[in-house]
Length: 307
Image (spheres, rainbow, N blue to C red):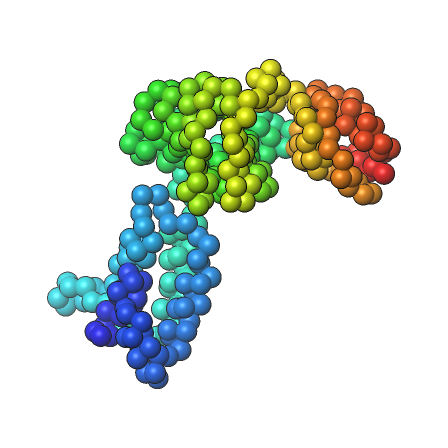
């Protein structure tokens, strides 16, 4: 093991388990390795930048930890001796934060009570429901049409290269189509209005949807395609919301998003909700949602109390 290149080799995954165990017995490296392992574990939830593997990402961070010898102009790797281990650990923390956390994508987003439409660089139209965001790399868009979605959005995709919507629960792949993607809580639901889409969960289970079909992902399960009512699906675009045997908590959450209010229920019912509301009149919406479920309510500014 070349100790002068240990840090770079460590982050590129080139240090074998045997070499690592040997270094852990070295007084100069024992504490440093423990600190590095803690940093790696703490940053494990971060996603590497687009089109880069973890190895590539860590390698680029390691490159930034090189020093240049002023007399020769050559680079040399910082050696992890005990007296600099704290400084190196701090440098890695800062570099990880800068490399992985600083925003580099273009992001469109909506707040509660807001619905907006945008055009992506290729002319694809995306309409965002309340409390939704989409992010994408505009500089690489022609080669890689991919957006990250949190919330609910309707896409009218311009034909061209593959178009991908990434969500925490799975991904949607299309060529040219119109579809609605609902990604909230533990659920991902996709409804195809035109063309064909492929829905893939995080365990690589997939299903293909054609016009008029929808499917939802919950946990490891990818639901079989079902026919949906196009007149009552994704109607949020015109401010209307239809539900059939939906969890009541889902309906209440949507009501809060559309009107930017907080609804406090004395007890959440286990009954499913079938009905409708719109985002034009709060009092009417509360009556349509709460009264059929046997709730009485009182409004105090942006807060609604129901029992």
